[in-house]
Image 1 (cartoon, rainbow, N blue to C red):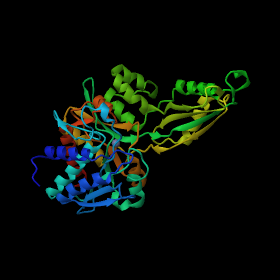
Image 2: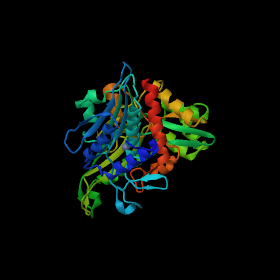
Image 3: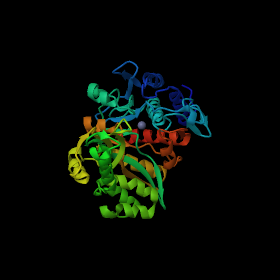
Image 4: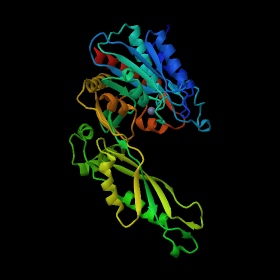
Length: 433
Ligand SMILES: [Zn+2]
């Protein structure tokens, strides 16, 4: 295969991947899996497709270990979210390279990392890399919707294909500059998404005679106010302790951590605050379907995120005490997903630290609790995998990247793709030999 550089190779592969429209729903990830399989097989990497339905395939490729060492999985999803072409300055599925950046839906989330994963394992295979344990590549379907076609299904139905000791996934790698300190964030834990629904009861009646009814919408408003006024008890988890020590030089009391962060930098406070406690955000409401009918029922959905290790059963008594007992309501949790963590003292963490030190000697790697969740939790739950979100971005600032993800004009600097390939090759060599 005639290639001039890994930089050119990853750029070209990403452009081609973006051109495969894998908008989920419906996904149609098989076309992306086949493109990657063709590329990897041409480079001598053994591949297999696994699919619950033919059009939504997952690709797993590997370089088999020659010894008894641990296995490392480079994980990525091939589906993307909808792109409204009218908002874009380029066609969202063009994969156009312009001014040193690859443009298109998925460039950041996360076909860029998928392409870098593929180039890392392909280039190692070409060089005759002999890991002690398996180096595995997985390009999975259906991360964005989560209807069990992707990694959750693989872990349940084909566990031998994706069983691993270590995994590198999305969700971290941002380069943050706080005063004189340069940090690379590595997501080692994730909050749990535990949204709930409140059903507030009243009594219907004609809206022209409010005295005869008991308006469930008005009662719900009281509950919404209480939820938004609530300040959850902050606590400092191990990841936050390490993070604060790196940024502030010491670990403040939980009650003052957000304030200390705010004194230093506003964006730092925005990052730290959700890592300190549960968050409760009322986001949806439904009541009467008729303007002149007072509703007997009002439903509120609250986006609730718990710290890793907490469960809805832990949170429920606190939420009920916030809501009080004067309004008649029912509370039902709708989901409990994510909320897992991996240890910090591991060979993969050492690799993250060593890579950051080598790439940018003045910078430091710090752990982070991701406020959302990724597919990493499936691996942690199924195999006890040490899974980190780390794909370093040196050129694109984190505020720019986060504004582009799931939005218009998503793009990734070629230099960051190249850095990503270097990181993944470094991690494989460090952890597997
Ligand atoms: Zn993603």
